Amino acid sequence: MQRYRKLTAATALVAAATLTLGACGGSDSGGSSSGAKTLRLWHYEGADSAMGIGWDRAIQIFKKEHPGVKVAFERKAFEQIQQNAGMIINSDQGPDIMEYNKGNATAGLLSSQGLLTDLSAEAKKRGWDKELSTSLQTTARYDERGVMGSGKWYGVPNYGEYVMVYYNKDLFDKYGVAVPSTLDEMTAAMDTFVSKGVTPLGMSGAEYPAGQLWYELAMSQADRTFVDDYQLYKSPVDFHSDPLKYGADTFADWVKKGYISKDSASLKAEDMGTAFISGKVPMIVSGSWWYGRFKSEIKFNWDSFNFPGNTFNAGSSGNIWVVPETSKAKDLAYDFIDITMRPEIQDLIGNNGGVPVAADPSKITDPKDQKLIENFNTISSNDGLAFYPDWPVPGYYDVLVAGFQGLINGSKTPNQVLDSIAKPYEEGVQEITGG
Image (cartoon, rainbow, N blue to C red):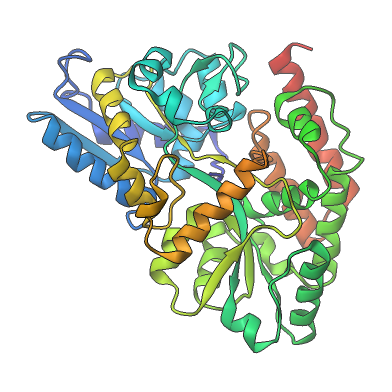
């Protein structure tokens, strides 16, 4: 999943890492992997999210099956781990197992730097290589350059995720708007809302949602060849031609037409999500990571649909469990990962609004949860998981945020945005590939 916040000062990064490491201490981690008496576990899922619920249960099972072993669990901010991960896990005082963002720019980068443990032998021994489909393994495996899709296992996902459209059924009914099945129908629906004085699409320009909307729009004109070129460097990418140009031009047009508020340029993802929860906006385009929270907090009628007309959508396996090379409890970490792959945990994730990778569909009881999983399976079965726009190169997330924030507030034209995101991409690809 793509949720971040930029820490701008180098001193702030150092201070944050120092505070983090100092808070968790290092005296009771155990002397070796096999003899460790503490498993230090970090993740950033909310307590009421599907994954948070599932992993809390996994911790209970782990404790029962490992008497005498303490689980030192800390729930971290996503941004804290995203910005400081390399510094944190390059220390012997970091976690033994950690949820981390998948992709070339994150897990791939750390694997290429030798900071993550090679899990290949464990994947084969424990059958993870059989439980996860080839497409879901894409984000688990990285080559020596840190490029995903092949090579050694450096992480294990136990859920999937994808970007969709969440909508307020009560507002749709109030204004006589039908659920769109094509992009033309989507724009017609938004025209209806605008004509009634309602901004149809909630947005966050200060974090990931704007870049993901651009990517969804681009994917409406894309094929698998383009996705492989953009994400896996199969061929050079021209940012000033379609589909990327179409995405930027259409995004700007949506702002101009009032589908997206210019005020959203400064909003965080949390602002966008809470606006939807409060019933203030008819739609948001965002990920399945919101689903469990929406299910527990929203009081009106709501549902979701796949981005209309798209075969390709932002999405992938979920974030991955990684084991830092400095971990002092690797065997315990492997055991915990294995527990999260069990049917009990997979079914629990599915019944709380998550997208499990190995659940029994007959054990998913809520029709809305079933639909969430079915929609993901539709995308996945069509080879339609297109990953995320910020994945290709390190540091690209901040580049995209700045670019599309400028598009929302009107300080940049589509061409200027494409200029600003093309150069860092090209330089990053050259650095990774040596070409």
